[in-house]
Length: 155
Length: 450
Ligand SMILES: Cc1cc2nc3c(=O)[nH]c(=O)nc-3n(C[C@H](O)[C@H](O)[C@H](O)COP(=O)(O)OP(=O)(O)OC[C@H]3O[C@@H](n4cnc5c(N)ncnc54)[C@H](O)[C@@H]3O)c2cc1C
Ligand code: SF4
Image (tube, rainbow over all chains, first blue to last red):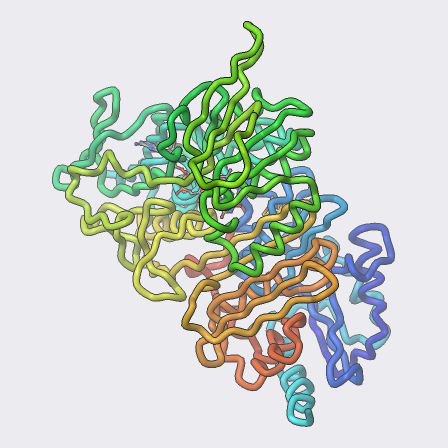
């Protein structure tokens, strides 16, 4: 399966992925509604994008009481808006924190890999986000441990 | 001969078990379902109440789907006894069903506090689809609804009642609301928020009687709610009363079965009772508790789902150990989200907590050493969902990932869970985790392994 590979060292924090994502998902340029979210490290001197891993368990999908979350053609867990009742169970079941709730539409939303052509990867100017046929791993844990750890030591 | 699986109760756990048997089995088995009600999800009833979904939306398996899955069903029938030595279940119409293995998932029922008049007209429970229909028929715009009991169920239907244009009063015997979902400071924020949004709350108030108010003949009887001496405020007049005063597990029918029952049916790590071919799941099962160790009843939807899937896999011949359940709850009241995880009420744990002076925002994180064992998060929906924190708290509690130095990060910045979550490499820990030992299948597909 093709997945979003994150290379945090390449991220400049330009947030184009967030804009592209929110536009694709909601039709609005609104980073607050992006499902890929860029975190600052070391007092905003380094950055890393974070999004759904499309995990094997699919905690959101198995939790949904009405079967609103399915697997789409790209292999991504995808919320069907017409079935979702907005109960938020998926958002507390997802242990990665990547299932969200939209107070405006009263539905859950999450990364669906844009059905196979992820807007974040196309928008990223430095190839910090690429869409590749590879196994998902924890792309940014080591990077974050170094960056966040250094800051903790200095304060 | 094909294995004969018998499922008692067609709620959340029952339907998850049936689906998983069909997904996992090596040889086509015979599945029989006995269920007092048609299969539906209780937790979406609030959305049926506010009319955002039709009745058809609550059903989890229609008769057609059950037929497609090859399930023989006895819907509308109740099991009345179980003989684990003879491997027979008897139904209320005298039918006897033999099984090779059996799963008990009869769930819970609402209980009304023992108050005079609690069973009168226009006094409802809200637990089953039929009860929900009763409440829907009773509420009109402008109705005054009084909910007795300020627990989780009251709060799941609070938004729905307000959106129907009703006026709402909540009456609670305890000194505070939501005793099983948030701590004192959290409850206080919720209470203030609700009062600001026009909901009247009366705590520390013991209802002594619910009586009819004499009105014009032919008009629906209004209700007078009377309080025990010492309660502040006078009687309350209501159009509709909802008694949300607790639930009890549906286990009466098993009293002569010889199954080991404590607060629920005690089950092992494979969710088997003391009769090795009798499993229990969901609200009736006292099963492995991931955080506290030992066994607990966690009467929530995700536990029923996981129990059902684990039992289904084991019935189908797999060997699946259940890692244990974690309490997770979320409720939204008037755009304020409140969630709690794990052992949030453990008074012996180390605590990091924080609130924001300018808005109703509150966090509490509980630790054993450098592992998070419980959490509470509360804030306006417009803030909460711009972060990844809700699910990340669940992930940290579920994995018990050692946070090391990043626990300090949470102490310094309790409103940013993400940095600590990522830097502690929680993702790497989570990626291999599954409940039944393989990637989950999408719910839309008809489950057939053979
Ligand atoms: C209004 C409401 C809101 C809720 N909201 C949430 C929420 O937001 N989050 C959450 O985690 N949980 C929530 N819950 C709780 C959740 O619905 C239950 O924990 C879950 O349904 C338990 O599943 P179960 O399979 O154990 O039992 P149930 O789903 O209750 O199913 C039990 C089945 O057994 C049948 N039965 C009972 N006795 C017999 C018998 N003797 N013979 C045959 N059949 C029998 C019943 O008719 C029913 O079909 C809510 C519940 C309600 C009522
Ligand atoms: S919010 Fe929607 S998608 Fe999520 S669990 Fe509830 S119904 Fe399913």
